[in-house]
Amino acid sequence: MSDNEKLKKYSGLKLQSQDVDVVLSSNTNIAKVKDPRKRARYEKEREKRLAKQSQKSDSKQQAPPTPPATNLVADKESELHSRFRDFAGRCLKYDFRNINILVDAMTHESYVNENPGESSCLAKFSFLGNSVIGEVVTAYLCLQFMDENVGTLTQWKSMLGSKKLLNEVATKLGFSQFIRVGLGVDRQSHQFHDCIQSVVGAIYLDGGHDAAKAFVTEAILVENIETTAAANEAKFSLDPDIQNFKNKLQEVVQRTYKGTKIPTYIVTSEDGPDHLKSFDVAVYLDDKLLGTGHATTKKKADQIAAEEALNGWKESGHF
Image (cartoon, rainbow, N blue to C red; front, side, top):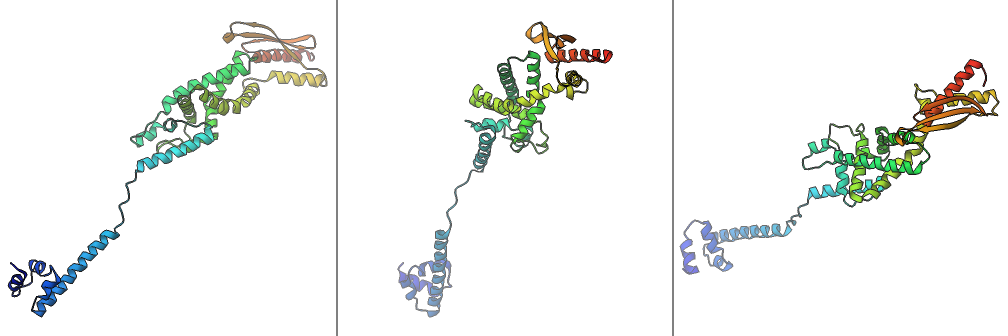
């Protein structure tokens, strides 16, 4: 059917959508409509359709591009790793090759229980780190204090590896800001000695024995050995059950002789293997024997000898 036949057919019908499609196919068809009212209606409908098409075209052009999907998990992990790398370099003085080892070492099981998908190696690494600390401390004490007896070194080792000291070291290094614990756990009261042992184990796994030894030596030994030795020397005056008879004897002698004399302690014998030695000590004033003592350590034997000397002075009133 030609355009003229279509216009003739549609000229007496009510305007419908299919009629409009035919008539509005070109400006020429509209111009051929003889009825001015229909022609006006066709032109108005054509303008509406052109406006809608223009709006659709503009909206497509103006629509912003869809932003690429971001990996929130990856971003979170990157931020976490950055924090722990800063902590390792600034506080631990060690650069981890695999930072995940440190993260797991400082993640408590309570955190994993509340965050499925996370992992914790704190307990396992602590088991390893405790052995490493013991080995490094023992070797250090034997090499640096060869003149001390085994009993004294054993006491020092116990003090250097104690929960109290390790908690102090961990607190000083800022562990409370980085250990990851569950919401029900107060990180301020957490037992940090486990955490620092875990970190030692993590350093050992990441960098080997030398790296772990360097950390233990710097963070635990060098920083605390003098305090530990001093505390061990003062144990007799700090313990209410043990009196420091050596100090008392020296005070009496100096007061009696106006500071011109001091007592002298001499080890007269040593018996037994290194781990079970016993000592005999004699205290003299000039060439005069004031007292003797027998004990498993030199310091205890000194105290016993000094106590005997004081008892003799109290009985006789002179040395």
